[in-house]
Length: 410
Image (tube, rainbow, N blue to C red; front, side, top):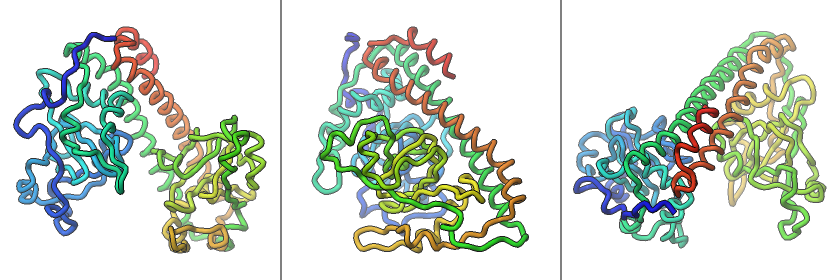
């Protein structure tokens, strides 16, 4: 036990509009959106508890003024109360825009910084205890939602250590997040360089061999062993679903949520796929794309590609990425859209001359291997952060005992 006093969030707000929900849907509609102005935060901007304002819609300043109670500023916390629950993000101290309008599915909190640091409150809500408190009054009828969201939020009691301890906790965890963010920025740059090099290579004017993608890649799907048979599950073999790809922030896939046994693997006709396999989610939704960095098996929600020799998997990955619109156009289905293997295999593939492939691989392979290295390092940092977070918040581990771990990591 920490001995730190617990204080309801309602007592930690600052100002008369410390807590506010986003505007009702009738007050902000699609026709209100503009190409510039005050950005609107939506669930996609809070994914993974990261504040990401690289893709936002806008309303004009008059509309923002009309909805001023729902404005979030630097240092404010933003929560999702309907839809993808559990999301929490902190508006950066030096954001891209000075103001943000929270959407109808969100609420914001302005914290009294003389009593508690917003960064500390943010990390507390990211902890298992904070997530449990945030989701305690969730209703699953229809769209998942927090019942009486503002009342529920303000009633949450959080431990409040001295400001010096709050600051130390936030700095330790923030150092890890800063390194993770720096790695992600570098990964984004590297992947953009790979894309650009592929576009340059594919614009070559030389004669290319035109043939179906099935002539250059082995294309398989997967399946799900019967979940009622315990002997098929929780083994040492990674088993991927599109959900695993939905959580990725870059291309490499290192781990999967579920695993199967050798007996389970025998139930999947495509068997164990090698490291380097290109994975494309083929339904619900179509378009998640990854490269397996471990041998794995897959469920029925994938099309998996492996080179038949002439074209490396890395090139196939970029080909799929650049032909995604055509792939989606070939999808069909009544319940949900799906691209079947039968519809995928005939897609035309222009095979470049060997010299073009070699030149591209000489440029792209080192860049991709650096992506893999950085993504692996990022996963280690995230694991360390997620391990330290509840221990620091509960007082089980004090900052002075965690600092050397963070210094070694970053």
